[in-house]
Length: 100
Image (tube, rainbow, N blue to C red; front, side):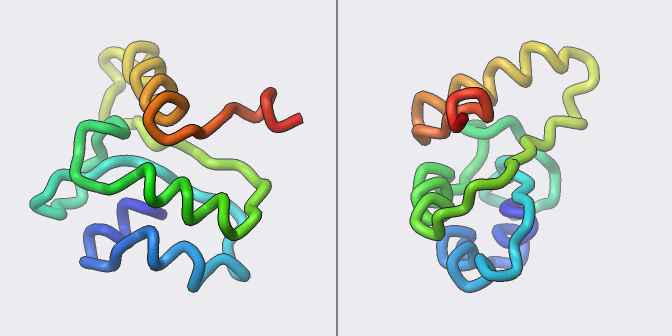
């Protein structure tokens, strides 16, 4: 969980390669600079998600990534679109359909 690494002051982009051999799935969310464990839509917090995505790619990970948006139950579609736009646009993350 990328946010958990950040909350315990572990740079997620450094944590990814160290744990890559044991990783089967990623959970992605953003976290505020306070490091308080409150999930934010990717791009709204302080995690360097482009660096995290680069680190994930460098490990040749080819599995699923879940974006955790459960705090946004009032408008999940908008939160999902915002997360997708950020992860694709700013981070270069594609969807499962694009991976083939």
